[in-house]
Image (cartoon, rainbow, N blue to C red):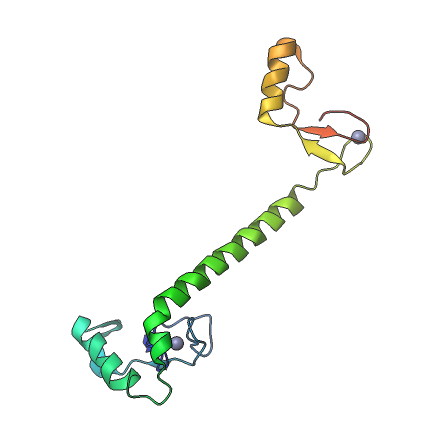
Length: 148
Ligand SMILES: [Zn+2]
Ligand SMILES: [Zn+2]
């Protein structure tokens, strides 16, 4: 079911994870789009572009909560929010990755380990040939100096 925001004119699909449909732009409670604007028997789409425009004219712009500034800048606000959201997701992912990267040295149990970079491994291959101890080792322990 489509919902609309009478403050900023945002149109969005119902989110099943939310009890009340809140506008992701201005946090106003959204209202279900009346069936007369909707494609018959198919309540997730407008009849056409014209009915969508009509809904804005008839129900959004006439509402006392209507906010012209939000209406005009809705896309910008949403774009900004999605950038912030992505940044948060990115941060969360990085934190998770760091947490799962907690590697301990099997010899001295130190967590003071660092990843042996691909470059390092290539260099040691070049220097010591295939017999190098670093081949196949991913981590270097700063505590006891061993590779594992
Ligand atoms: Zn809104
Ligand atoms: Zn160690």
